[in-house]
Amino acid sequence: MSGKREREEIGAPSIADGAAIWRIARDSRALDLNSSYAYLLWCRDFAETSAVARVDGEVVGFVIGFVRPRRPDTVVVWQIAVDESQRGSGLGGRLLDHLMARVAAQGAYHLETTITPGNAASVGLFASLAKRHDARLRRTELFGAEQFPDEHEAEDLYRIDFPNGMESSERFRHDRVRGAELLPELAGDIRSRDRQPDLR
Image (cartoon, rainbow, N blue to C red; front, side, top):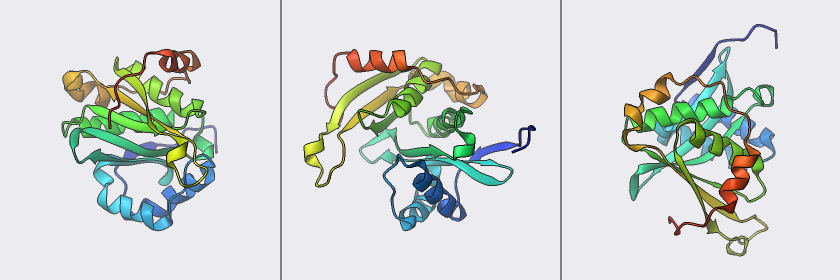
């Protein structure tokens, strides 16, 4: 890449982005890789609760999610990843800010995601999101390792409750934070809090 920063654009994905999303997920070496078909289907059916980032027209990051059927005020982030060329740039945080701005306009002011206990980077990403927007972040156990039929790690549920109205979500639209650094001290503090009732 040249020293000049290319134009970055974040928006809803199209079916044509499915292949690039699958590639980024594969190359992350951290996500559970779904079939290429699954990502194409996600871009068709869940584009309104997902986003892709483009630099110079090329997809370099994504976040995919869905609204919980029984909790229409809650968006679940299924996966988020950025291309290796963008790591450390704060793009993951900008993707989450963009997604929450869009779903807030639809009345979703809560976010849920699951993270394996050892994934400090993901914990830091979502802790930073909560900190930027003065939101409450809670962690509970969701699925224990014994519940999986394979060698999958346990999954903890992280829930972020944004302030009611989120200042009419304008805060998200205009907040151009370049991406906070990971907050290991905050992540550790989250883990030390008393556990809240199961949110399932």
